Amino acid sequence: MKHLRFSFDVISPYAYLAFERLPQVLEGLSYEVSYQPILLGGLLQHWGQKGPAEIAPKRDWTYRQVAWLAHRLDVPLQMPAQHPFNPLALLRLALACTPAGLSPNRWVCEQVLRHVWRGGADAADTDRLAALTHALSPGRDPSSAEVKDELKAATAGAAARGLFGVPTVEVDGRLFWGLDGLDLLSACLRGDPWFDGPEWDAVTQVPVGTQRKH
Image (tube, rainbow, N blue to C red; front, side, top):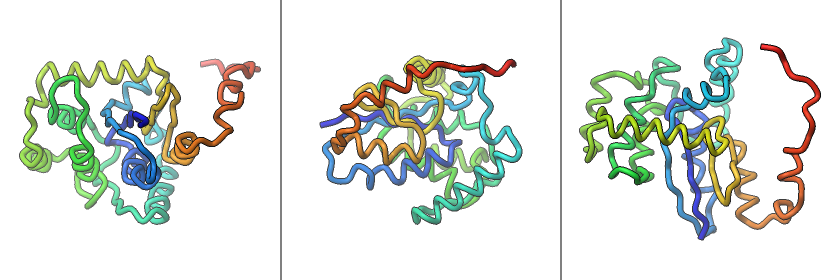
């Protein structure tokens, strides 16, 4: 049985779509998945990147593309009333629904992701957040120092393992990034011989020809 770690931030529509599609991608395989909330903003800061929504034309394209992808995949998706928004409360809520050191289950992650990406409401609205908190009934206080530190540690650990964006699925030391990375993941898990060849590691040996000055 393969163990997969699915790292996500609720702010990412690609993470939502990948979460919804993952069961179909893994159909017929023997696996277990742990779901890890992390802060995308922390990864972007670590690597010195801007998020897609911070670049105006890219923001428009991102929203347009995810609307098309949701249509093609037949996954309900409505943009929240405001985006981007601060996802910290939702990420901490997901972590607070499980004892320290454990990952939230798929149902909890489904609730926080669908809170954002279904219905078109304000994901950060305090009344909606309170209602979701009541429905999930977390065993820990989402605003506690313990939970806050847990999210920070998870994000820092993800960056240390080489994660640079969400969603990312980790299996056998390999990272599969993005919604479109799920097809690559499926091929790997189903024993495609390409993964036994040199190509996976060879890309790390390509010399850097020039670097942009900041």
